[in-house]
Length: 147
Image (cartoon, rainbow, N blue to C red; front, side):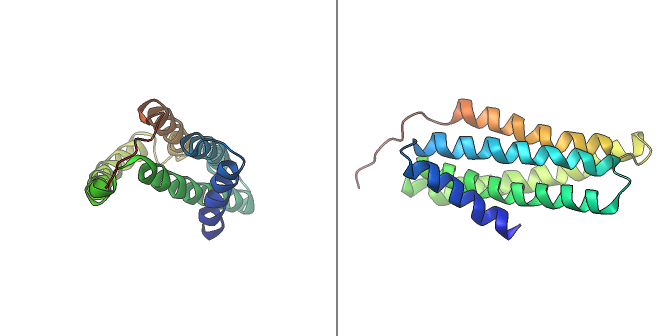
């Protein structure tokens, strides 16, 4: 996970250093890391323990890289005076979402007779849904605020 977090920052910084717009660089990085998370689907159907461990480890690292970029993306276009409000609201939404997710996971496992394949297929799909939403919601230009 640590390698993913640091690697996520390195990749987007590298792209920004090559002249790519910061928002585009972070979204491109997030797309790459979402693609890495697809490998977690192999973990559900794997009969080999180490294949499952590798697939889940790759997904965890990619998740950390995703997280590093999404926080940076939000900081790129949030005015400084609203930063704590935005992050507080995001944390609250994450906590509420976590409460609903535990219920949803329990329901899916009950209905599918403890089959994790559905869950391990939904995980990567959520990253692509979130990335699509971020792509359309992220401003194309970062407004400059004079203090």
